[in-house]
Image (cartoon, rainbow, N blue to C red; front, side, top):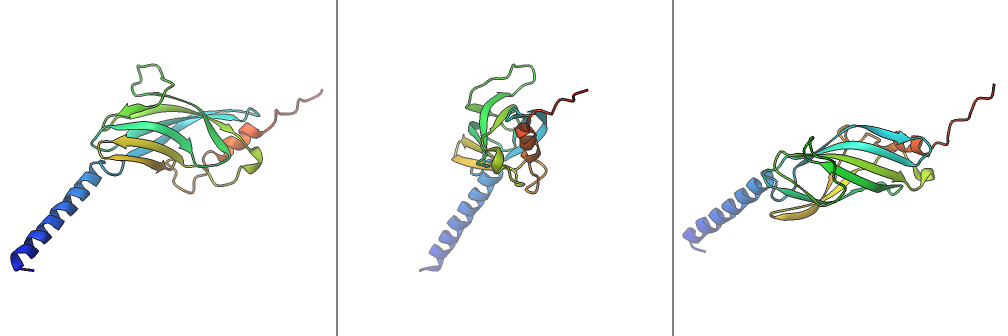
Amino acid sequence: MPRGRVFVVVGIVAVLTLAVVVAGRLGLIQPRLSLTTSGGTVGIGSKRLTSNLQLTNRGRSQLVVGQIALSAPWLEVASITYSTHDSRPPTPALPFSLEPDETAHLELTVRVIDCTAIAMTGSEVLITVSGPMLFRQATLQPPDGPSHSWPVEEAADACAGPLPSTVS
């Protein structure tokens, strides 16, 4: 191969590599999402728990959230409501859009479908998103990291029977 062609091929490879790196940093190939939690409620013995989550688009392009699920087979999403602005009432439907740096406030109601299967390993939140150049599932850990057992303790409480009454 002549020397001139080698430089052209190397130049094309370098430009393509740079384009992929830039697209990745902008969130065009891999979604850049962050997830935080801010409390919730547990119905003792109800087999239901509710978690308040904040999902933020850290990328530079709009993302569409099409599905939210949990990785633990003993849990099932019962309902999701969201609001992208504090002043708007929560909306119970998916999909919804997240602009760059926008946060969705989610209320995730979860049903424990098998109380005997509750393990000490928690659940990841699986979010299917699409954007200009992507359609994929993002797997997010609650903010305490992979060792956090969310929502194991909450699920155990939801499976607990009612407290025995005290006879006096």
